[in-house]
Image (cartoon, rainbow, N blue to C red; front, side):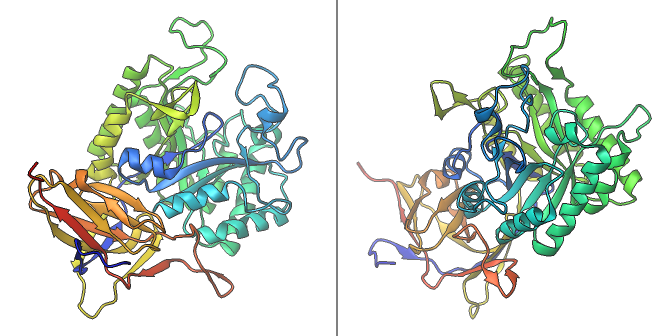
Length: 479
């Protein structure tokens, strides 16, 4: 780092331990309804990283048309999003005949560089052979403690794998892949996604129950309302044949509790449950009602604090319809239109204690090297400082080592510094901070992957700051 006469070097005084939120906030980014949006934009807009970003892909290597996206090859057989020969997600470009130079690997690196974990939703042909699964496991191993959601909503009828295979065959495939992942990519956690109960509280589709034993995490997808026929028609309240659902807050919450209880009874185990897709659809009753329902649900979770519910994934960041924090501008897909829920999500929910990771500060011994460790988004060790802030500052800028990949928290705002960048401007984040502000720094993997160690990959990355960061703080200019 070059010398600068107008900055004050910072001597780290604390070690900062980043721990899990009681219930993590995750975010979907890209699907059959929207494009992937770079993490730089999302972090800058929302001001806080999520625990995990969900990427949605499919793998049908034996199908005619593969590896192109289904909607690029076929016309839908009927006006329905899933009326293609195989599922219309982005094609997973790895596997024995593929390459890790494309997607989802570049997106996964982007997610992890920004201090978040990856959740890969992968819809798959259950006929895929084990040599393919072994190759995929090896491709995922460098991404550390990521999660893979195998054949989600597998008790439904809309995906290609649900049309081609019985519930027992779907369960057998999940278990076969899970065993391969445990051996070849032991840091990767598996997520099963299904679950509904009858009027007596018993699980429907019991042939899927063996999945519960082999998954690290249980999950289900829930929408307070959903226009499932989008984009082929519009919702009207008086429709004779409904093309939308409108369950509401109480029904969805009660159903989540009932499904978890049924999972526990059926498996004899207790595992964390997550909602891996969640929203209310602005197509049903409009954006204002959508935001009201969402606020009510998140508030209910924050108040009741169900111990089993460990994560909620908002589906999704930018959507061509009305299922996003932003709606894609039809004139330019690279531009987003804010939903009514974006502001309360950004300004309230992301700072709600029940949905926020913990930070534990402890003294850093004088003899200790300033080393940071990164295992996952809610399991990391960083460095911390308390910095004095003048009243109404004109500048509060952090000068950091140029080649470091850093995630920096200043007060309640988070910033990303990629390698090659030196300055982080956090002036707006400290204007209401008071006489001092806490600054904590973490080091996610700069390459987005963990380093190889021996025959496998390390479970964590380590970064030592041999050059101390510095801060440029200036009070109000007398102009």
